[in-house]
Amino acid sequence: MRKIVIILLVIILFSNCKSGFKTINEGFKSVVIDTLIKGKMNVRAILIDKNKVWYANDQSSIGYCDIKSSTHWSKKINDSIVKSEFRSISQNSNAVFIANIGNPAFFYKLNKSNLEHLKVYQENNTKAFYDSMLFWNEKEGIAVGDPTEDCLSIVVTRDGGNSWKKTDCSLLPKVVDGEAAFAASNTNICINKNRTWIVSGGKKARLFYSVDKGKSWVVYETPIVQGLAMTGIFSADFYNEKIGAIAGGNYELPKQDSNAIAITFDSGKTWKIISENSGIGYVSCVQFVPNSNGKQIVTVGPSGLFHSADSGETWKRLSSDNALYTLRFIDKNTAIAAGKNKIIRIKFY
Image (cartoon, rainbow, N blue to C red):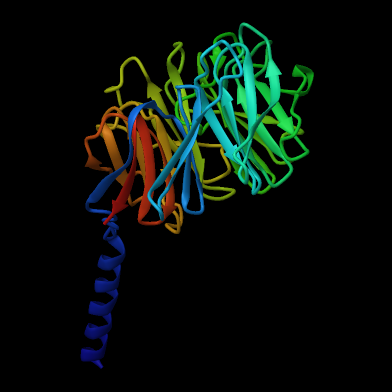
């Protein structure tokens, strides 16, 4: 009987010791990078469309790289005497949509079948500056821009992108003076079914949240550094309807890594900072790794490419490339990234 008791005590103590250990998923250990496109470009907006990687460029152009066939196509859109810098891109099954920054603001629809483009929205305003766009479904899409009045500029389509209508400020939350959005990586907007999240920066760094595809909004505070013109949230990603990440920091002090990345587990109501003393600094784009249960996160910015396998508790730098602005995953081990003068494919191992 005594031997049985001792054995039971040992089992209990061993079990308790095991539960006290923190299991760390080491995640990715290295990356292999190959260049898909190289040339004069400044790409902050990409999307994955089966074998194609579409991009919007600062040279008044849109293009794609077909990964399977290794072909590259691009097209200049010269409908204005003003050179366009496109920083927003989105799609439905039939077309790709792009938007430029600055005044006048143009939205273009590019037919995937014949590659012909059509201007579907124009806004003439000295304050016009569109930052990001995304589609909820085949018919409905949203674009966000800096305030031209006392709210963020929200433009919505309900007919597949053929026409777009700007939402009246009386129907939107007010912004404070100096609060806007950043066109850093086409990740100001996140969508999950009918849910929509939009992030801001500048004097305030907040989260605008809608559960009904942009018809009504609530606003949540965030702990991301804010208060100056170039501080705040530059990027966001939601793994599902609950787990999300926001990232940014101080663009003018890119090595400052205090209050630069945060995570939520309640749709954005509350946030936890996960970037203190990480060495990451300012972040241009944050993305969850697919099929990782919201545990694995990747960021790009001036300090390089970083990865966390434990919801941001610890971070590992996988590449020191400081010229990447935006990134999207094809699958859990493959991503496309773009930035200054290149678009690359990243294999994670």
